[in-house]
Figure 1 (cartoon, rainbow over the protein chains, first blue to last red):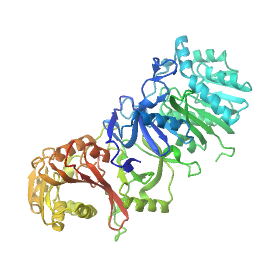
Figure 2: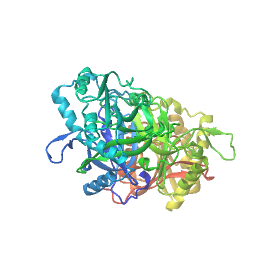
Figure 3: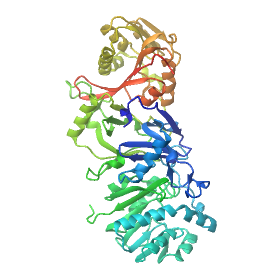
Figure 4: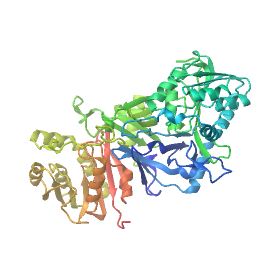
Length: 302
Length: 302
C-alpha cells in the first residue's frame, strides 16, 4: 500500500523505537487491504473494570497509529512512517479485523536489548508464588475463552491435549471442564509449576519443553503458549515449535498464543506444513484483539 | 497483503540477511496492491552488452523474490517471508511498476556492519582517478536520461540547478546540454572532484554539503545524489536533505537518486512538506527499475 496512498491523505509522521527500548511493542494489524502499525500499551483487561489497565496480549483501537507508509531499520532502531488515523476509523478497523478470517496481528520486531542481541528473560521470573499465579491466570481468561470457541468451531470432541509449558495447568484444566473427554497432559521445567499443575491435570511431566515427554504423533491437540517474547528468543521459538510439532498426529490441531508477542509469524507455521485457519481473536466484548493462531496439521505431511 | 493471501498460493519461504551482511541489498517494490521483496545482485548496465553485469542502482525482474508475507527483525538479522514468484510474473510486475505513477522501490534496511551500528564508508573511496570517474559516469547514464525525461515532463525551461555533492560534474553538465538555459552550480568536499567539475560547470564550490555554498531559496532545481548507502548513514542523509532543502525556492523541484540505495523513504520527503510526484524510473529499454524521486516544493511552505 505504501507508495499508493494518494497525497490527499494525512501527511505521514514517524514513530521510532530504539533497539534497547521495546521494539516488540510495535504491532502490525492487517485486515482487508489495510496494513496498520500500532504501539502496544496498557489495555483494559476486563471491560467491566475500566480503571484496571495492564500490558498484556490485548490490542485496543486506541493503540493503532495508522496505515503504514514505509519502515526503516537503521542504527537508530526501528522507524515506521504512517498516516495518523482518526480514532473512529481505528475502532472500525479493529471491529473489521475481529470478523475477518484473513486478518493478522503480528509483532515484526524481536526483543533486542543490546542492538542485534536478542535476550530472553531469566527463568527466575517464573517463581510460582500464589499472587503471581492468580494474576497470570486472570490475565489469560480471554485466551481460554478463545480456545473454547476455536475448538467448538473445529468440532473438537476430546482426545489428548498436550501443553509442553503448562505452568499452573489452569489452561488445560479449563479445556477439560468444557470438553470432558479431553485427556490433559502438561509439562514444565519449573518444579513449582509442576506441583501446581499436578493438582489440575491428568498427567504432568517435569522437564524442558525442548524434550517433549510424550510420544511422536500421540497428541490430538497441541497447545503452545510459550513461544513468546517474555519466554524465549525467535530462534529458540522455532526450535521449540519443531520439537513439539513432531508429537502432534497428522490431522491434529495446534493453538499458538501468548501473554506477550508470539515470536514466530504465521508464515513460519505454513512453512512447517500447517494450514493457518486463523491468526487472531477478539475478546468477548470485542474491545480488543490478540494473537491467536489456529493451525491444522495435514493428514499427509510433505 | 500479508495475512490475506489465500493458502492456495505457493507455500512461503524465507530469506535471511544478517546485520553484518548487506541488509541494504533487500528491496521492496510496490505496485498496485502487491508488495514484493527482492534481493539486489549484479545487473546488466547496458542491454546491448548482456555479459557486462555490475551491482548498481538497477533492479531487474530476476531479482524479485515474490510477494511479502511477513518480515521479522531478530538477532539473526532481517528475515522476510515471501511466496516465491514465477519468472514470467515477475517480469510483468516490473513492467507494470515502470508505468505506475504510484509505484515505489525502496530499501528498508540500512547499512549496519556491526549489529545496530550504521556505518558509512571512508571518504578515501572517492579518489577521482580517471578510470573510476569514467566507470562512475557510465553507470549513471540511465540516471541522466531519467532526469532529462522528468524535467521535460515538468516543463523545465532552465534556471539554477544545484548539486551539493556534484563529483565529476557530469550529471549537471549533461542537464545543461539538454536544457541550455540552466545555470549549473556544483559543490564537493573532494578537491580532486572540484577540479574536474570546474571544467564542466558554471560555478563550483569546495566544501561539505552540510554547509551549502548557495543562498536560501536561490535554487530552482535541487539535485541530490549523495543521500545513499555508499556515501552516508540514514541519520546523516536526513540532515543533508534538510540543509540542501533550505536552498530550494518554494515552487522548485528536487530530484533524489543514487548509485546505491537512497537512505530516506518517500514518506520522509512528504514529512518535509514536499509533494512526491514519482518514486522510481525505468531504463529506456525497460529492462530495469531504479529509485528516482521527483519532488515538488510547495509555493506556500507550512
